Length: 583
Image 1 (cartoon, rainbow, N blue to C red):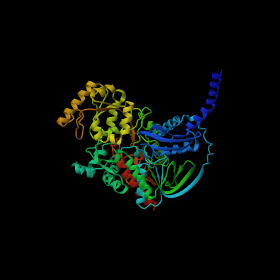
Image 2 (tube, rainbow, N blue to C red):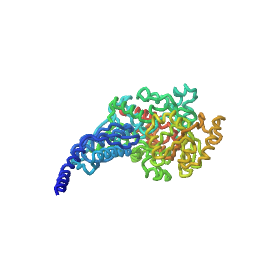
Image 3 (cartoon, rainbow, N blue to C red):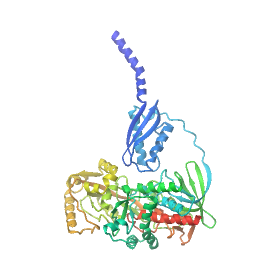
């Protein structure tokens, strides 16, 4: 009897004490890990009495701008003491990685999201109306917009406002490779490559664009690549890329092989020059006077409806690659089944606003697909940099080549769509990929592709082919034939341009890929001074445009690396023209 009483007393004691231990164990700092866009996100989460008091990010490799969302979400969680906070618009993968890391830390504390009661939310402030007056307003803080703002400042404008609807700057430039077609550049001279503005002009003109605009692009590309280097501070590495459709290898590569280098330096230059950058501020309407001149722009910030009165407006909002209805209207084939490489927010806003006040558009039906993208998400794959150095083969499920690996994006994309499953497989050696900087610059992407099985690694061709369901015997024959072409110095199947490189010994990577919407060549009609034009060819005074929001430069097929040249050349011109009008 005494033993039973002792056990009963012990059980009663434990029921009283265990909750105390549970409560105590949930206090402290706990580490959580989640998968972001470019790698692991690691958080240190401090909890006391079921209140999250601090969140510190100790590791992340997200793209600058995207990485800012980590702090924004952390601040929201701490302020509200709840895991039920909104993801940051435009940064889906980073937001999801943050939440995964946060929930991991909370789980390690022995708690769940239901254990956090939340704090009473402050009553939402009533939206207010505001009016401001400035010399120049630039709409869109991607590459073209920031170049325009910098150029306006350097050309005498003292008051420049830059509006961006996303919570960070960068647009498509931020997530691009940001290579720059610069004919006659210093690296070409070192390699003995003969090139000229005229040859670049002829290459771009083949797609059927406006000869006058292409002439300006070709004549200013090299000078403006140097301007980015010497004035803005962009670092170009000591190598060139050879993009499809170009006659010769002429494309400069930024440090890190991504647009992060350009956007980081452009943003710093904007801040140095005193450009007023307004994030989370979406332009909604262009304002015109009785003569039809643009005299301002309306915009919405999180808490205000703002009317900006200004002497000049530059539209640099990018294309419409993420606007499904706009895509289908202009090309019904580019429907919901086609994914997109574009950054969030590339919705055609500027084109729509300009059309409403009478601006003409051109080439809206010309929508470009990028051939080497993630078959599940549409994201552009940077492992493909190896192809741009000329060191890969592209085959179909049957193990056969079907297109020139350095053909135009249109040729390659249409070629892939015609294959079994509308996918292709890109073969390379791991050594060649490493030599081309893939492991150094894009390791997180490589690890993710290998983890998901969208790229496989193997010691032999048969091993990677079998893993991907590709005809192994035919792949071996294809590689043998290719290496024979390399030895003889000519590709007898597709006349691949540039230096021919053999596919050497393994280990190999075999990458599954598919086309996705990458660039919309159509847009607002401009002249060589970046003035926006009406259908009758007259200028809309006070309105300028630059970058992917414009049409007529790239015709029906933009050449790789011509876009960064375009946004720089015409962004500079737009800034110069706007500054001249605003004086």
